[in-house]
Image 1 (tube, protein in one colour):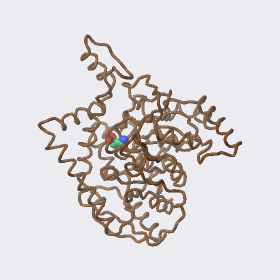
Image 2: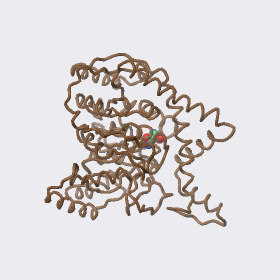
Image 3: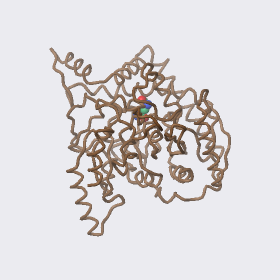
Image 4: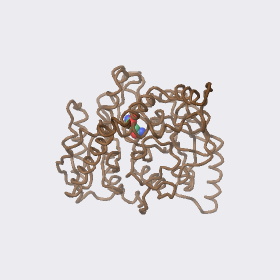
Length: 454
Ligand code: GLN
């Protein structure tokens, strides 16, 4: 009831929820009470969570914050959310996001931008919460849920977590089932939690992760007790500091925080080594070929026939055209155009195939450092703290907005786990995050290392 009242009070200002489900929450909480009374409490019994609008929730608003999915209420539940309900969690509603998870500021949502609950010291200008999981991050930061589901195709869990002073983890590709999550770029999409601290993130991920016959890319490995890793010693752990991440023009404050993180880990007993990930600079351009390519194919299904919006036309082709013209926002159309172009017969080899080869090189960079004994990599998450809504420079040039993803994207390209942990405030009084990148399926290392920073 406290969370429902808090949403009632604050959501108009923050716009984190696009659908609130108090009746469902009360019904689920009642069932929780009964299980607790019967001595059968699950790991998340009664814990109120918010769900990114990208996850299919049975009978509840699921639109990926797009106009094209107007009125869509699935008759099925995503595996990740079902796993949470099976452990006793309670759903509060659906959270705002960039349309189809395309964006880094939550400004592409059909439902309008989310307002970051943080404010610059001495200023009242509204800031973005980051994206695409901006609603998830803002809701957690503003205490409008105890934790939230999110997805990360190219930084969308970690960057908003950094902008809101919360913890987010993108697990290894295959750790969580993608079934019932609206597809953006299927070879990169991965679900994970945003939470208030490292321990909560560990508990939530344990519940969300599973192998699933309905997603053949989910991996059949036992899901460890991540919480048990928290508080373990960092003695003997080797942390790599990638020199290529010291990009030109990196603000001094980001550099300072990174050095502070290094000092903290050293003090906690970890060994720090300088490493090289030589293909880092190609990750961003390669991502902005691979992701739109897969998106253009995935989004072909929104044709006005199967679900959501339909704008009638004189024949079926005209109906498709009118529906897609009216249903998709600007950024989504831009991605479909880029993706269709790079997949077209004349350009496939030059762009898509080349980008896939670059992807392999990025993956190998990480394999090499892990082979040399590095357990995890420490890097910044974002090139700045949260920026203003409607930032003119970023709005005028989409490539500038894509540069927001410069530190986060390599992890998706290599399929590795990446965690964002708050590391302090900048001179404007805004949170900054540090990133830990780990070996495939070794999320425990990230939790225990992040706990030393937190
Ligand atoms: N900024 C990235 C993009 O727009 C974020 C994608 C994501 O992780 N969903 O593609």
